[in-house]
Image 1 (tube, rainbow, N blue to C red):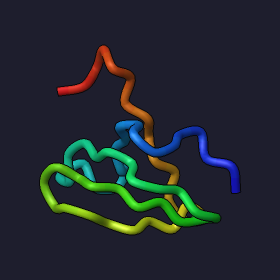
Image 2 (cartoon, one colour):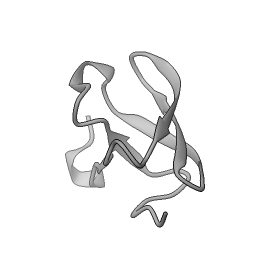
Image 3 (cartoon, rainbow, N blue to C red):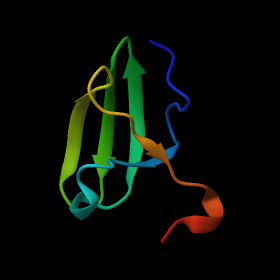
Length: 60
């Protein structure tokens, strides 16, 4: 799976806005590890979730 983001990018989980913004730690195959500001490190299966990249101008 080719993600449109990589390590260091800031993303949001569209189904979990309460998690806040997260910084991508790694993307391996269909899994991304993201460190979210409000819940910590989460591994996400990209076959089931499409993370939204947060442009620098829109970050909190």
